[in-house]
Image 1 (spheres, rainbow, N blue to C red):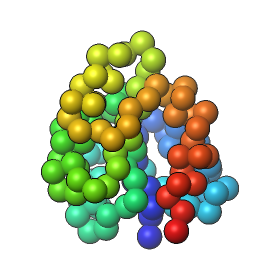
Image 2: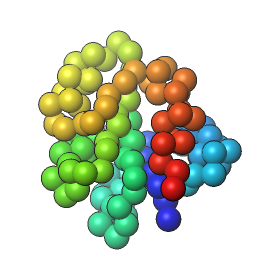
Image 3: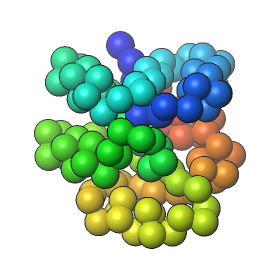
Length: 117
């Protein structure tokens, strides 16, 4: 069972998340498209959803849909530090946490560790 789902279309960052999760003994499943993530979410609800606000696949709509389907599942979004407007919009659509990519990367092990059984 994947504890973490991620909407992330950057292959290098997907690999970073996967490797970090592996080292911690948790599972992350990355999706390049919102449709794939939402289909998997309907079959299995993870403990955390991570959304790259720079993903090409309508991240704001995805966040709204996730929050409507399962408001108890935390949704953490990250963004490029210069895109503060994206951060504001992510809070408005229901993210439970929003942070710059640099902070997310720095705290990735701690964030992923919180999903362990």
